Length: 84
Image 1: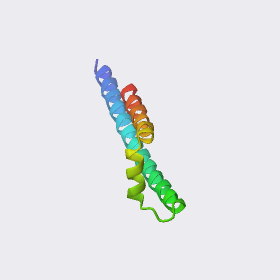
Image 2: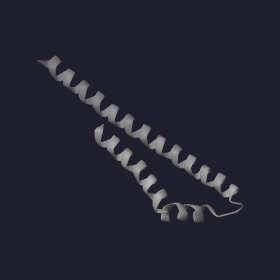
Image 3: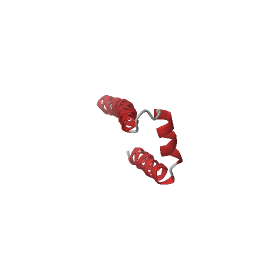
Image 4: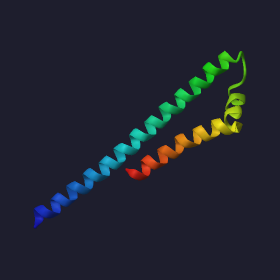
């Protein structure tokens, strides 16, 4: 009977560890993706000859097609989180 309790404790610890690890991986991935997104904005800024990054971001967010594309990206991320 005691080994049953020990097995349950180990499973709970393993499950908690896996959830924590997945959360850390997701946070790191999000940080990297935002960093890449900002770098991409800087490249676009260079291509547009001095246009401010915030101005470009504003244009992206106010453009209905671009907004829908970004929204779909985040929807996919939410669906993946719900599935896991």
